[in-house]
Amino acid sequence: MKILVSGSTGQVGNELQLLASQQSDYEFTFKSSDALDLGSAESIKENLDSNIDAFINLGAYTQVDQAEQDTKACYAINADALYHIAKYASPNTKIIHLSSDYVYNSIKDRPILETDPTTPLGVYAKSKRDGEGNLLGLRSDAVVIRTSWVYSSFGHNFVKSMLKLGTERNQLNIVSDQIGAPTYARDIASVLMTCLAHPTLSGIFNYANKGQTHWADYARIIFKLTGIECEVNNISTSEFNAAAPRPEWSVLDCSKITKALNMTIAPWEESLKKCLLELGYEL
Ligand SMILES: NC(=O)c1ccc[n+]([C@@H]2O[C@H](COP(=O)([O-])OP(=O)(O)OC[C@H]3O[C@@H](n4cnc5c(N)ncnc54)[C@H](OP(=O)(O)O)[C@@H]3O)[C@@H](O)[C@H]2O)c1
Image (cartoon, rainbow, N blue to C red; front, side, top):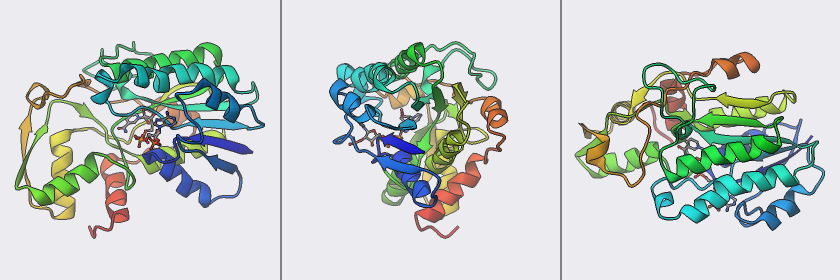
């Protein structure tokens, strides 16, 4: 099977490259944004106009706050691109796309199901919801995976920011009124590999590591595991005052994907430890 992947330089892109290098069942081609520009219909057409069995779309506009200003670029990459992908991919090409917990915001008191309404708040969130619609509107056989709070030893993320800031400062003010599940990009990459082995899989699936926390406790656990001495003060989302709104509750019910792929999901703390080991910390 020939697999084409966009967004090779991102967190999930790098993790998938690692897993791809350890197997021989699939022939992977990874493309950076230079080689496959999701902002260009031409580039999408050129890349998808070939004999590929599956296309995994990991490229995205992911600067959530910047998107509030940079609306056009965000929509081009996260929403319009999905229309072009759906249009130009051969009907024989399986499309697997990553989306976000940010598409939800109406449920606050139980894990969110794929069938719950999408009520995205900011530009990034709306562009991700529209991208899903553009893809599934033309390609009901596509797979959309909604994930949350992604981190990895690659790229920029909360874990790496905390490891840096925690050694530079004695205390940090961190938001404690957004609840969700940190999700290791390597676990997402592993799920993507499993999806390839289930060619009849289609539709929308939630996937996040098991459990829940808030950002302040997440930081505390990072510091506890690594022995970094930094005090964490809880603050509210309004005190933090980010440019883009974020959902208060992002706990995903992942039972649909666990049944469909016959898999279990690691608790978020367990995967966090793996990532910290990968970053060279002795736990
Ligand atoms: N990060 C999170 O917390 C989070 C949470 C939920 C869902 N997700 C979703 O998960 C997916 C992967 O996220 P990630 O964290 O791995 O992202 P990431 O580390 O921010 O990487 C984004 C990737 O998209 C690429 N990209 C940007 N503009 C592009 C363009 N015009 N054409 C092609 N590629 C382009 C980037 O390439 P360059 O390096 O060249 O810019 C980079 O490889 C995305 O769909 C994201 O929306 C992420």
